[in-house]
Amino acid sequence: MREIQLNLTPFKKLISLDSVSSTMDIVFKMSRLGERFFVVSAEEQWAGKGKGNRRWYSDRFSLSFSIAIDGKFLYRQSLLSILAGVIVKKGIVSYLGIPIELKWPNDIVFKGKKLGGILGENWNEFIIIGIGINVNNLEFPCYLESAISLRQIQGREIDKVELLKSIIKEFSLDFNLFAEGNDILIKEWKKSCTTIGERVKFKSYNNIKEGIVTDIANDGALLVSLSDGRRKKIYSSDELVTER
Ligand code: BTN
Image 1 (cartoon, rainbow, N blue to C red):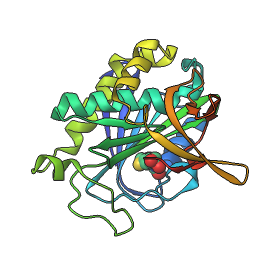
Image 2: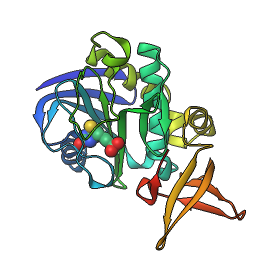
Image 3: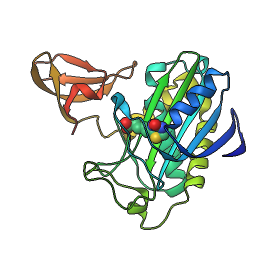
């Protein structure tokens, strides 16, 4: 275990671990004991968590970390992973300068391929944001056919620690915007979002319906316009049948 002091207000320290079940679990336990504003990263997770209770694949080539924030600092909690996505994107772009896109609700993508994901957990008193990025991976399990890594994009090895610092720095710089759910970040999210304007299929009772994504609502839901002029709100990616 290594503990590094961070001068990135409000974040105080980075704890870097070797092998853990999930950085979400470690941050949860520490937050329950009253710690706030710290980051935990791990070289390896043997029970990484993805959205919708799915397993998250990561290995030593991936960047896996979670951030703890005090619950009272997030005004619009439903926008948690959406706003975090904008900040993570800024961190990647400012370190590597590559054009990253965001896919609703919390995927980090490059040319339609999944580069990483964000998992927001709101425990009221504290909030945990988990971030997983494919960094130096050269191959993935066959079920992850649409995954891509930064190394595959850049054609060279990437310094994971510098990338992590760049993302935390953006969290620090934009913390007030993030905490207030500020429109600036929402506008930035819309600019980078590949989902707006797409035709999507979604489950509606026993039917599959189709519509065009027109916007994101104030509560973070996707707004879909149906052919009969009605609008439908979609809250979870699990409601979508084909997302692109
Ligand atoms: C997704 O399903 O797209 C979200 C994936 C989030 C993965 C990260 S890796 C670091 C943190 N620890 C976990 O177990 N999950 C998150």
